[in-house]
Amino acid sequence: MDMKYVQTTCPYCGTGCTFNLVVKDGKAVGTAPYQRSPVNEGKVCPKGTYAHEFVHAPDRLTKPLIKKDGKFVEATWDEA
Image 1 (tube, helix red, strand yellow):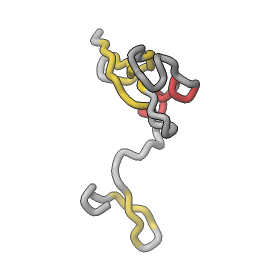
Image 2 (cartoon, rainbow, N blue to C red):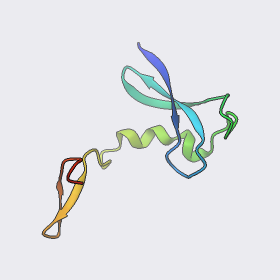
Image 3 (cartoon, one colour):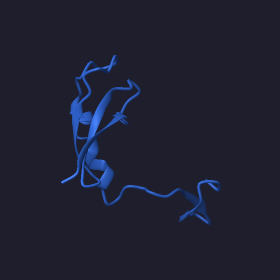
Image 4 (cartoon, rainbow, N blue to C red):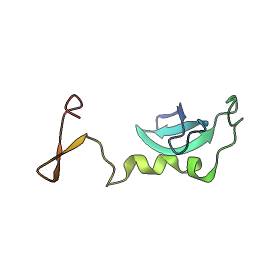
C-alpha cells in the first residue's frame, strides 16, 4: 500500500487555504491538515475537507470543450 501526502491549495474559494491531499495507490482518498499554512493554520472548512471527492466524479470535465454548431466538442488545450 503506497500512501503519500501531496500539498495543494483548496479549489473552492479565493482564500487560498492549503491542505494535504491523501493519495493511496495513486488515488486521492482524503484530505489532511497542513499545519504550517500561514493562511488557514491547519484548519480546513467542510468544503475543503471533502475536496478530494470531486477528483473522481464521473461528470468531471477532464478535457477542454469548445462549442461548435451549438454543441460542445472535445478540443485541444491550444484550441480552447
